[in-house]
Image 1: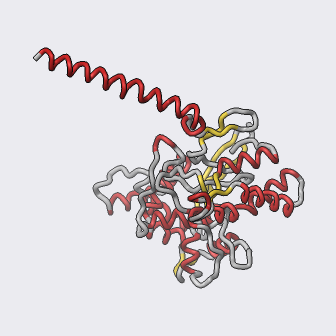
Image 2: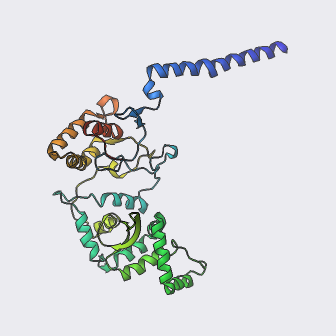
Image 3: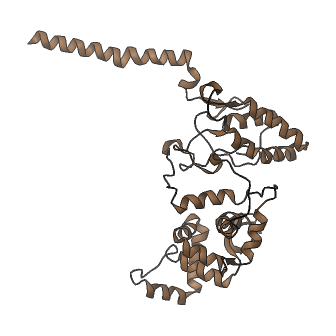
Length: 336
């Protein structure tokens, strides 16, 4: 019995040494010597030699000088990798895509759609019926509630509206006896319906202004132009204008990846963004936009990759890599 026990202990020690010692040390040595870049997170560095991010993890870029990655359902948080999990039948998906397309949509001739969305919105009529904002909130009450919850300034604006419209609030409580003390989100649809009546052809939008003391203040005011109009109401405009021919937009420009952290975009996506990127750099540098566009186009071609060494599949561009190339060639801007 003792002999069997000693053999078992010996085997256990032997396996622990191999599995917990020799094997991981061997793998570590191979990783650090042969695959050092990959083993240490595929970290890319800026021109100053400091780490700026991983080649494998997407990060947001908002400046017009830079190419932007795919939308992320995880807010580009590597610790919260996730897809949007929205089905094609879910209106939230259609709404998110529409909001992305609205401000950048173009007709086949290259003319921007945004000004026409604003003119259409100002007429305050959707499918022959008045009060666009009320119709939007009634059809999509979850989006109306999401608007209230999205920004403390929005909730404060609705709270103030509730104080100045006690009769409307009382009527809501009468119709909803289980909600004795309605909150701003509870009143979202009623608020937009009332707002639409009192501010025809307008939508409540956050406006950033500089106060007399020099501090930045955010307030909500009725507007009939701007990015909120172009994005929120693009889908309704499209329904009113179904036969208008628009330029196609790359699918990965408006759809999230399964991880929410895809570091690559298709070459088609990058070329879709090329005019914006090149024009902004041209303005910053005081150069001819055509020359800058040609230089960046060549840069994109040099930084593409595809599956199986380019033998199959779409061509892709790593967003962080190409943005670092832009910074290396043209200089850095204040922030991403």
